[in-house]
Length: 332
Image 1 (tube, one colour):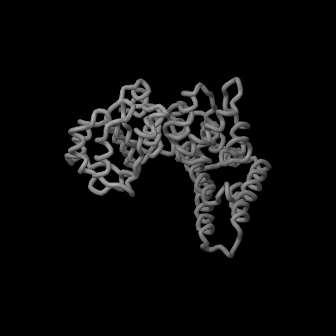
Image 2 (cartoon, helix red, strand yellow):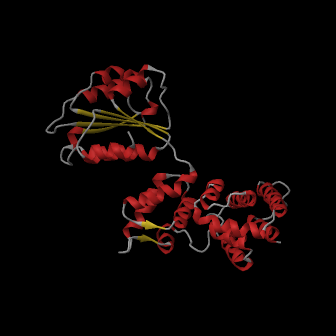
Image 3 (tube, one colour):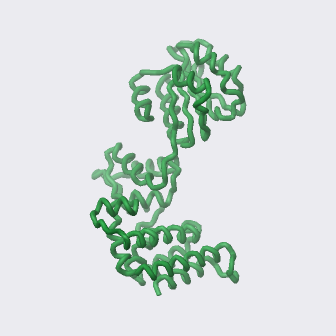
């Protein structure tokens, strides 16, 4: 089952007695376990009927003992086992899985690990529990994840703003979720997330960011490039030099690919570059301003300054100065 299907069933009061949530993306595991924690029992029922256990502090015997107790003044007893990956010999739950307490909802959160599908434990889980694998999503899927998340809340957002949030916050879905919730508090009546709103609540500048830098360099807009570089140099904590190099390498690599694309159909270009069609214009402009010969020269510049950022061939020059030098050579 997909995570939203599981949540929908829980909200409809269609419960399973055992949920085994595993995988390397903690966000969905927490989302499902929190939904169970907040849905099944009323607040006045929880003190006697809802227990949270931690893998580092408990054992199989305690888990089974808790699961076999009957509820007091409620229909169900809820046991949430967090950090289950630290439990030794979790396979010993096999007997309980095959003879469950029907008044108990047992939620097992098994993060950052997978279950061996060849073993009997996996087969028993598959037959006797809701088994959900929470898979990590790729970095290039994060902008679309953000757009879908907001769309589910009936909120609109430009694709560029989605990329801006993703670039700033990385692929930590829990962190992104928390930051987006800040936006939703102050959303206007038109239900649109604007760059100004992002800057206000998340602290990402709409004018000084890696996408604006790439665009300015691609256009050879020296004035705007220098303004952004100056901002980056003053805020090195938020704009690490090594990350700027990495992003520029990716930008120019896509520019090189654009040079070689023969099928100029918009969808084909987007697929070849692995980008949203919104950004095609940036690479079209960049390819006109930077020949293939110049691009290979830029790759050498980026490699050279990557080494300097690591202390190689670098006579103690500050990163802010290295950034200025590097951009100047690219634009020269």
